[in-house]
Image 1 (cartoon, rainbow, N blue to C red):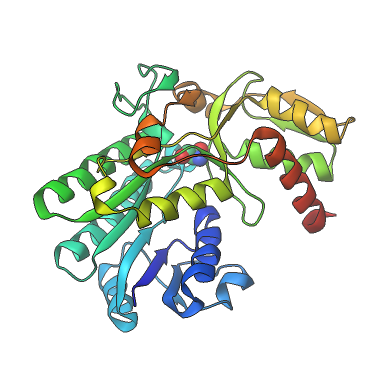
Image 2 (image 1 turned 120 degrees about the horizontal axis):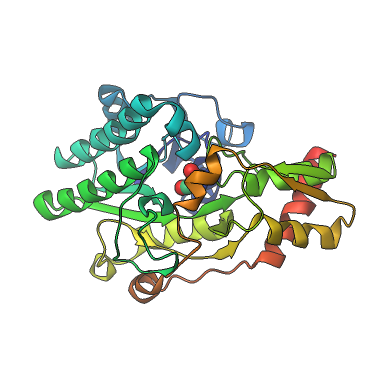
Length: 315
Ligand code: SER
């Protein structure tokens, strides 16, 4: 039986990935790990271990304890926080990856998932329909760390045959766990504020379109990529995947269909500069062809789900 370790299980993606993988593979086979305590559903739904991704010996200890075969490295500093703490971001994002890549090289584990991001692109990248292979000159600490990480993943695959797989996630929208320190966080905040206060001051400008995705699609993409036959994987840096593309104005208009009195104003801060350097919509032809990726949830459905679910939690 293949057991999986999810490092970063208290984060936005980790929370939902653990819950979904436990449904598929059984609770005992999915080991959640983080330096922070997860939500109760994760904590009491199966094994949880405290792990700092910078502590390689501790990661190895947990891997051996549970006979783990596959590791998902979701611990990272996101774009906005990384600009404030560049040294820590570089250390955490790179060393965390190396610790796990090296455990695979030492044959302690067989397979790795590591998330990349649309942040690998930069101002010189084509802004729309951004291809899988294109100019990549990221201008953020986070983007630089993700691009370097992609290169290292491909290097470990080519040199040592490590089965490492990756996705360039767009901004992810979910209601179970809050995002932490990203530029795309506004797309979740806006829902919380719409429900609680009926108004929102957005830190991006009105027409700043960015690639986004509903969390269920992102989790399914991750699982489908990891389940794909090895012969189907032609990209060992990281796959573009595309779901939605919208601006703060467009999402606000969707919310207003349900909450007509919702009022949004715009006060762009440093995160607007980060957003400006990223594409607004990306091309995912290669993922579609290689492992049959296809998004399911559109803007209208996502808005409906978010408002309905958050109302239960927040009101
Ligand atoms: N959601 C991330 C961020 O905004 C992008 O990968 O930092």
